[in-house]
Image: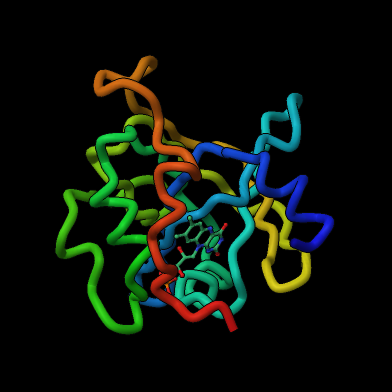
Length: 163
Ligand SMILES: Cc1cc2nc3c(=O)[nH]c(=O)nc-3n(C[C@H](O)[C@H](O)[C@H](O)COP(=O)(O)O)c2cc1C
């Protein structure tokens, strides 16, 4: 086991689904690398792999939508994390609508926001998108129980090859 795995294996972040629309295309993928990164102004960063189709759409999008899922929404996690938009139209299988700036918002998400992209930064094989919220919604407390976390999604095989 690599030394860093001892640290990384202890992490169990909430998972999110990040969606984007640009140039008539829609995309979205399951994301474990995300966190709030500023208090005033409130900003949130998501990290998207540069091999994912979602990255190819997100890099020309002005806004991205970020969604939290309930633990019971494993199917949605499998759809967005286990399939690539290169092979399947994920949006045919979920309820969604266009929100601010054309961002596709998943209607069954526990909580979501649309954020304006204020910075993009290289992180390695993932690119960070720093987002300033412009629209948001969802339930304050999950009706279905806890949110879906990495421990719930670990067995999903990423739909897009990692390299
Ligand atoms: C548990 C788990 C965590 C993931 N975390 C990320 C992530 O933080 N960033 C990312 O870009 N992809 C992440 N992925 C991979 C993408 O969700 C996956 O490859 C997806 O199928 C890409 O779809 P796309 O090609 O339509 O963009 C994760 C996948 C899983 C199963």
